[in-house]
Length: 95
Image (tube, rainbow, N blue to C red; front, side, top):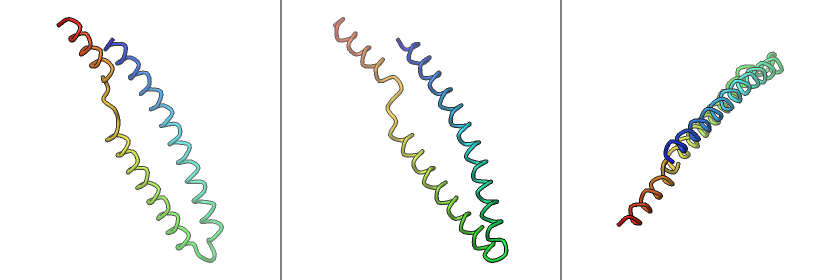
């Protein structure tokens, strides 16, 4: 039972990691393109302000994502809750 849960968790984590890295790579490419487009658009008038605004926006989104990730890690359920509950049930049955 515990081996099955470990295998399922490993497969789930590998899938999530792959999708997460792919999404992060594509998001970075999009953000770089967006930053270049905005810088080109405001190059003659407000280039420093535009780049500063984009930087602040990226920083705020990064902080929000970091806080959300920390919250998700803190509130995650224990890995072997079902296995431990089954062990307790078995122990109570054999007493």
